[in-house]
Image 1 (cartoon, rainbow, N blue to C red):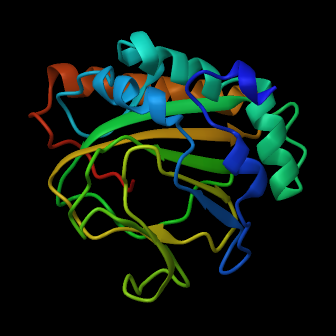
Image 2: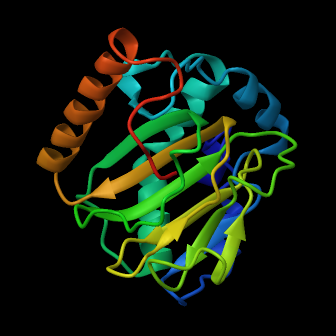
Length: 219
């Protein structure tokens, strides 16, 4: 099965350790195949605004489009469900894409209860900044006491179970910070509502709001 994936490398997903404190998570450094990573990064869509964009609002081409297709395949969902001890068979995937963050991003938060699993896949080659590194936290107020820190380097992936205490955030970073977010959500209706919300937000960003300075986000 993994051999049929041309951009994703699923072998580490089977073997990387699953941490359970402060909430269940795993960090995978090379979930994109090395031979495909450069092409995926180079084909990342042009996003002139900050914030999260649904797939319907971006142009997916080349290896990036292939990656998006593979992220939505049931084989990946089955493997993630097995690792986290969850039945995700009928849980629809929802994907959004980010290109920039500003000083308004990175606030400590937990994900909404309509999300069951969050997967964050980063596409930033040669990341150097300490700012913008996502931290997995023990509470909702202390960004400096954390279980793990995840620099958003190209090919690095964080997967975590959405729980009432899945606190996470990062020090503000101003600039390009490319992220794909995949969520398995509770129902198709939830996915449709979330996509409509992101689509409307993308419309406002295109026509009404200044470049890279929209409503706060947290990735």
